[in-house]
Image 1: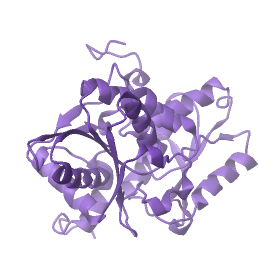
Image 2: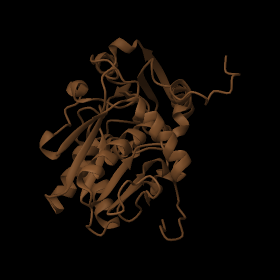
Image 3: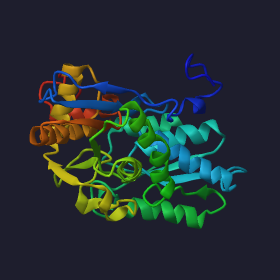
Image 4: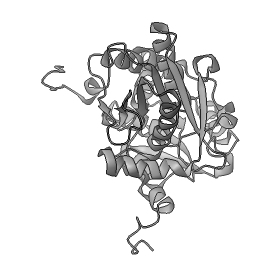
Length: 321
């Protein structure tokens, strides 16, 4: 591989690392304080389209190294979309089958993308799923497949797998430290499986304990796919509250309006989770006035067009029915 010429022998060489980081772009018109530099780390430019490329690759490589996939044995995983898409595409490219257990409420776009990536879908009732409901039904369903059909499925289990955290200790954290030349003072993230916040924070706080890590959560009853508020974190074993300095709750509808503003104001085609993170960052900037912040933008808007039409009046053309 050659990161300077960007010529690669396969798609896996394109995955992000300290030598090949996902890009960071400065927020200009939408930054409320000129004394606070604010950057967005654009994770949708990873080869499989989201921040979850990092965890998916780490988990898959560990299974390969242990000899737990191959020879007819593939993967089963509960997912709200992004991890499943990354895992399915990677697994298919490496010759493994993938079964994804997904909540019915995730956007149609994500279900179609999972199939395009090569996954077989189990779509389950929302009340059984780790998001947005409080149950852990989809995890248990995936575990039951892995147990009952152990010769057919290995389960990475993104909600408990330490590789989900270590992926960000090895890549996201070092990338941000290098890209900011150690100037970063604030990290803004969302909460999901919590691998991103725990791993990135662990690395950055190891470099500078004074870095403020701000987790942004949606209000109760939200429909922002893949995100959780603190009351929903029981499904994850990866959240470490000692690594988080602030948890901000943001009205979930702002995830969609801020995403639209980022698209039209900054030219960043960011998804609703990025919109929520931006709103949290904006509130902290107004409070702290000075600093150097990095927002991790998990994915882009293309997977959420149906949700955007639901929440943003005027986006629908009138011909959708």
